[in-house]
Amino acid sequence: MRNRREPTLELQSGAWLIADAHYAHYNPSLYSFFESVETSGLPPQLVLMGDIFDLLFGHAPNSIEPNRKMVDLLKRIGRSCETIYLEGNHDFGLASVFGETMRVVPRSAQPLIARCGGKRVALHHGDTLQGAGYELYTALIRNPLIDRALNGIDTLGGGIIDRLETYNRNKKPCYRIADFETKVRQRLDTLIEKYDFDIWVEGHFHQDLSMVYRERRYLNLPAYACDGTIVEVLAETGDIAFEKRKVK
Image (cartoon, rainbow, N blue to C red; front, side):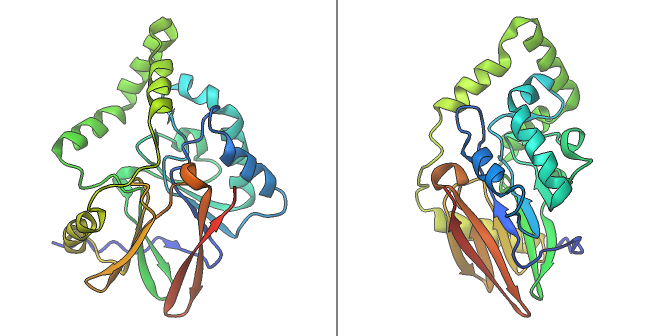
């Protein structure tokens, strides 16, 4: 049965969509960009589509402190610009971190249905329909008790955060997925049965792909970590354009 979620966001023309920046002290370019626009160049609305940080668990303080500079900058931006943060699989449990300055959307509340240009736009980080094993894994890593326990072990010298950081640092964020368009069609067959939308927008896969299937538009956002690209929403009555802008 299709889940007809009512829109809870008015996606504005001029909004920026940013996905998969994977910010860390070893990958600071997003900080430099935000710092350059903080005082005079912010959009009317900012939608962070998940994995903005390479490692940020809201219930694990040891993952927050290495990111403190970026966390504080985003808080300032959230006070100046309407900001919506869709949690990803690298950054979650963030209501306690950003909840006072921006709208935080956990995975359980995604897709976030937005209204824009007369269309229903479904916004999701993208880590859905990944199989039962992934669902179990993602439920465990988002459990606050587990995160606090891991943080305690890390504090006692377990080195968990350092090991996760090393693992993430060695990953290659820019890659091509074989037959991705075929996989998208299969995903959309399921998503169309589950949700009512005109446009599905997600990150996560780092593929930078736009296509039309079964009269729905699909957009996989470019990964900021790969080429410093953001997407600007340009909305008119009855139509929406997504314009890519390279900013680094």
